[in-house]
Length: 583
Ligand SMILES: CC/C=C\C/C=C\C[C@@H](O)/C=C/C=C/C=C\[C@@H](O)CCCC(=O)O
Ligand SMILES: [Zn+2]
Image (cartoon, rainbow, N blue to C red; front, side, top):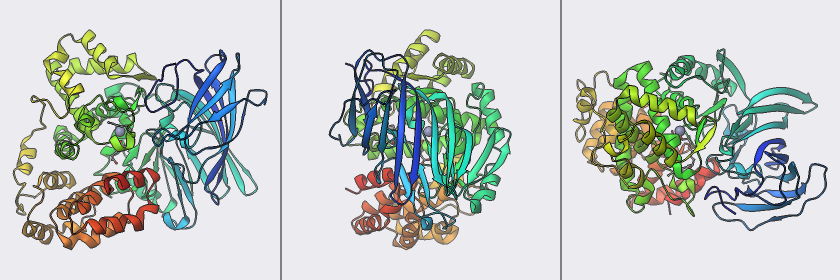
């Protein structure tokens, strides 16, 4: 018996799921899915146990392919992993079928009332499975090391649409219900299983891309993401053919906990990207880049998350460089570097979580999550690119993607490939320190440029109008993130009086400003902070603001009272993460 993943009960001596068929009926009144799943094995079972991951599922029946009952045990829940569903599978069995019901507080799902949506007329339901939440939707081997294809059939109220990170194949209306069928032909890790149900409409952006949104937001979304085909072409020029057929976008409700989620064929995006100036489309570039780094070549467990995210930030900034020039890519890298330094301070008590390769047994991935795998992983790849030269490094990247296409990888797989293709390169950048030591090695490639230096030189004082001439959101975020914390109340007051930052419409600028002001004890911004925390559920915004409020004695009670009031409108993942940081 050998567990494949510290966050899964999947065992490499058990039958391996190759594909599954999932039927579910969405019950908005009870906030549950009534469902049945048939797991088809890669080879007939040899006879013995099959351990599946579940969380909060009410199991009604477990059967063989002919409908005969199979013995099973649903073990007590582990606080991080959920409950092991142990099934006795007879020798020769090709599949198992499980009928079950999800729990109203399934950790992957957020159920929204009509009032919590933009249109206020219809309910909404969406999923977020990364890293280990798919098991709250369906019993499965919930580890990226077992990739699975699937078919799905979703029964929803006829007034709503269901969309899925899969290929739609049929849509039938039957009275007051409609049944939408999907197929996912490419094998995916379970964390990329995703769907949404709501009052949705779509608009084509290119032959292989459309945007879905609530009707009132569709035109704004289509304008913001109009140039998605340029991103696709730039990415294919860099990384090779796009393997997923469609690259559709779904603009989520404001409570969506992340900036984006790279669900294949249907990327989920926070509505906070609809800035009206296309200044935040780097997130689309990031999610698109995952089509190669993360979705095609996938970390085998969360302990190698940097293989997903460090590579994707590197790829995102190469797309940005191709479309907007090296200066913009460098500015984004500089913001990431600033936030990385802040994160090292936040993780001072848990430096082991700032290694690239982590040990996460007994650690909840959502609690370990930070930008370290993103930005430290990016800097490590930049160090390799600088040492090898861009052409040689691009050759490495091509070989990496080709060698592990539709596969699951570990850090050792990357080390082995680089050592084989470019002997000595890893030693030249002290790869061991990057991978297995906390923080950054002394020789790391700090993002630098003239424009960047000019912005950073202003940190600590209020810039003049002349000095900020031509600044966009990126320069303002970089300046605000580089400001000493706490800054003086005099500086905060002058900044806001001069530049009306509390009225900023760009969410990145607004949150960087409000966080600085809260960390500096500037009570003038508190009404806007309270308003914003009620308008978004994106953890990138919730975490720094709640942490800033909780970090000062005079505003800690406000952090707690606000969270008590607002928590139900946040996704279950955000509720758990913010609750942990307020402890
Ligand atoms: C050391 C790493 C430990 C765990 C990593 C594995 C999974 C973390 C889990 O919490 C899932 C994260 C999902 C992230 C989805 C989107 C992000 O890439 C975007 C985050 C930033 C943003 O909101 O823009
Ligand atoms: Zn990502």
